[in-house]
Image (cartoon, rainbow, N blue to C red; front, side, top):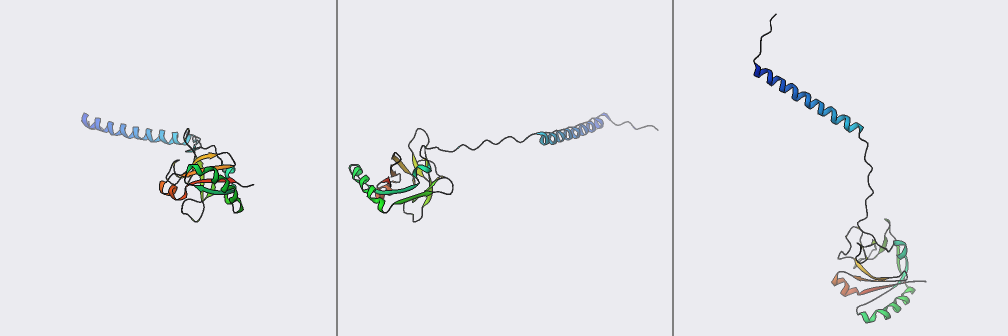
Length: 169
């Protein structure tokens, strides 16, 4: 039996289709074997967006609280804050590693953190906001016994003044 001879152009198309099919099959096989053999890469722990030299453990406790609006009243206000230990402002540990403080005009405390982007100032505020957010307070002084902060929101700062916290014995 004699086979009919196909034209050359038909053979070339057929070879191209076969070659394309083999190439696709080879690529698919290579992808599958590479996927199965590749070990999962270790996940790097997320770096904190900010850091701070003030830890939650350093601020948790009982504090006397007072505030001033004029810088010349700072020393007198610190003495008033010491007297505030009769009815102390309580800072508790937060559920996620921060500490609980009242935000401006809030009746319930919120979890806040100390945050800083070096070499900038230290702020106390909500952990999901960047340092220096309008709801933050800037730490002006902290020595473990006295914490002085001012609100960044000018309207809030005008009402509440500069806050002075003195650790109660």
